[in-house]
Image (tube, rainbow, N blue to C red; front, side, top):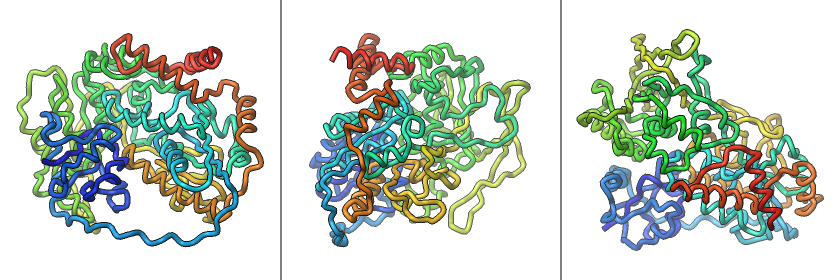
Length: 565
């Protein structure tokens, strides 16, 4: 018997540290970890001890005898990772850290800007290590915490959202202050944070989307998937938006996990959506949607698609939905070359194999379809006053000097009629509180998490970064754990070496400053009241929760909790 990692894997690697036989890979110390779509258990090495099951925060690990028809394929997916891959030798003991002059200061105070996964993992990393006492202040510009867990994870992925329970435990620590509904750069400055803390960690993510930069992109009916996801997840800045769902076909440009999330939501029936925490306004609009087909367009082939095998595989189990693939766009799994580094080629081949199976699956008389299209790039959004279609150019894959392949347009074009176009082609960061961003993805220039001055190239004293604003939009929720630990290592080293300036004011002074600047600030007790209120509404309607999307209402619920206390 062996254990199997399944779809809801969050990659936070809690299972890796408890495995007594080192059979879960890639580990955070291995080169492929940052880009891994999930973790995998070696069926040869597993000894059936169950330690990984107990450690998993999202219940993603099952013994093979508990696999269901929907999860049975994961036994093959886990094993595929180890095909043609040399099993690692036992890890050597890491070299001892270089001796540093220990600081005589007994308290380390750190501000974290952003309460999403990377910020919460950074807080936990700070608070769980031995050394000086630590106090953490978490600032979040929204009135509710946890970032992409609340506003990015698809509503039908409730198991993935369970990782929020770990963040709740961190937030409830007595050495953590939550300042929700407080925007750094508007209500407080960066210098004011440093006046009250030894260091500031920016964990602000990559909230902006990338454009297609093609004619017609600005037509009504053409939107970013970022906006659509925020709308159906109840983000208060997007709750007022509207999307035209009166047509029968939508086209999504891009084939990452977000594209598949959006496709699933667009074709889901009202009965399925009512089981989730999708925002009430989105549930109402999608219940009346006339969309019957969603076309997901990728510029390269099935094996090179950015989505993960678990998300692709899950499409085959959507009730009442056919997954359609053009036979001439199928890529034989055996023709898929290994990626640079070699061992992950079998994972890419698995994508091609699943797509080929979809192409051969007989269509049922279902009312809706998801069409997976490949080797196509958009060149123009068509329409007179609003979206009426999209023009795509056929690509061919051409090997490059690095052994990969790039998509090259052939000149053959195809028009697809549609009334809604959603682009899902990547994310980029935005400047916060005057902190520098640079590069194609607008990340904070950094060295292992130390933010660098763009002029001198040297670390900015006391300034650090984690998550997507540090490394770009890559990985999944749990990937941020190792990312945060790397940054915190640097921060703590700098503290011990005396490179951080002691703050002139402390915790109480900060509380008074925030209360003066932002009376509408919500603390952790206020969030607990909001959380309980949403869950109570959910129980009344047989849903996980009913999200509040109006900031004024959220503040009122939190204020009532403070008054009653």
